[in-house]
Image (cartoon, rainbow, N blue to C red; front, side, top):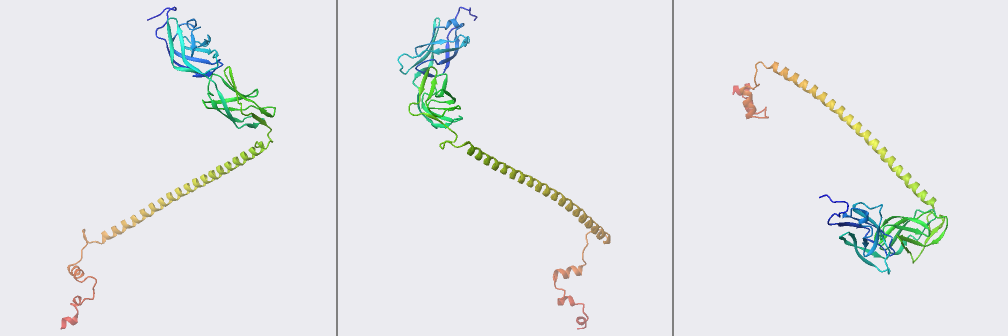
Length: 305
């Protein structure tokens, strides 16, 4: 069914929204995704709220019927509260299944609490609601600490270089809200400071590790080449041995064939050779006994008696 420009699609629905929490001070950009979220920006211009607090939509980020991006106003009274995201489209009002929370982020600690002035130190930040809001920025005094990850109870950032040494306040901006580390400071120290490993020592350690790795690689490569050569030599020897065995087998079989041929020629008749009756009988009756008395039956002495 086709609708005119002035008609609203039925059954609007909010499928998701991000983020799920933000600071009391507001300023959080909430992205709302859904179905049939207005045919025109005018349909939702002044009719979006988050936990009962007005949320002003951006006309440049509005995607017809599917997405609304709005900025939440500050919470009056600075008290944690929560509620659904609500969008009113003419005669329809739709709410999210999940609630949005106004929270008070807390920074408990940072580690380490000092680092070299050339920057590059990774700080581990602990606290609560550290993932609140749509824009999270960390600073040491006014120098940015680049945020690389955030979770509910933890975050990480990398320090910038500083031309000053000393202790400075650490803070995080959660949209329009700012929170400070109350129990401690971050200290920028010189490279030569005893509390920080010197660059020369780090370079020396890395160089030693690199040289050891190169040595292991060279030894492995040398052993691999030698093993490859030995394998080729063994294969060549096996081939030569096979050729020798084959030649000897041919020669042996040739000699055997010659002997069989000579034996066949010596036989007067074809067939299997056999012994005469007397020899066969004596061999069976008197085996291994050529001097037995019975074998002397043809002797002249016995014949005279």
